[in-house]
Image (cartoon, rainbow, N blue to C red; front, side, top):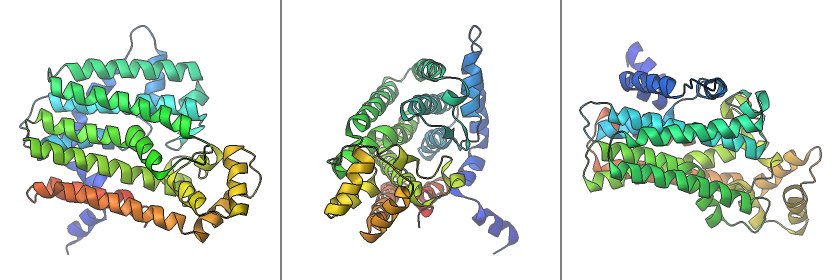
Length: 337
């Protein structure tokens, strides 16, 4: 292998996607900067820029662009507008999530609600949702509008379901999957599906890219949940153990609770249901999970969803973009390998 080839291999799939889509992404970033402006409320671009320009990978808008190009889009601005739409929806949900979760760190930086206040975060999130709907209407494609509008509703539904399922040890893996499909996978699948639709792809290709985004999003979220119990702040962009401190019933906890003996169940009731957390409880939670193989079982589930994502792409001919999307499905779970 040449030195150039080795350097190329060393790059992550997101980096390779970003290079392949550089012209489109530059246009998307211009759209984002233009549309997040506000003539009358300077707080809006201040708060939005703090999050959008905090070093996020722009994965979701890249999925729109990659799907569109994989399906043969020849040019134009519509796929770029949809990519910006997806990023606005994502940013709006992050602003709202940080208020709901009372988070203090996002992408390695203080959250907007910490730097400004909860009211600013909620209202700026509302503004970005409104901007997203303005953008998604512009291509004039009712099917795309339906996909993204439904995704927005599903995301909100998933967040409410998570709120009602939180701190309830009766939460099952089935309910967890519904939450994940709502809060995370819905926007991944809407990104890939809308990219295919705006490119005029056949139904089989649209369905395949929807399935890819759905499975990728689920694998991505399970991996994130695992990293909360064994990652680093640099890897996660948040504080390790945040999910535990926020008493979230993520997949590793659900699997550990299902195998708990009486003493362990009493521990989970105290720290999750009652919120009585003490020094050393995070470490004990990690030890219980390891004892019952909960982390490994969740890791296996994530790998399975990654494999489903790759399998969904089998309807497309072998080409560089498909290879990058294949590699991306591996990459989201490589963090937990």
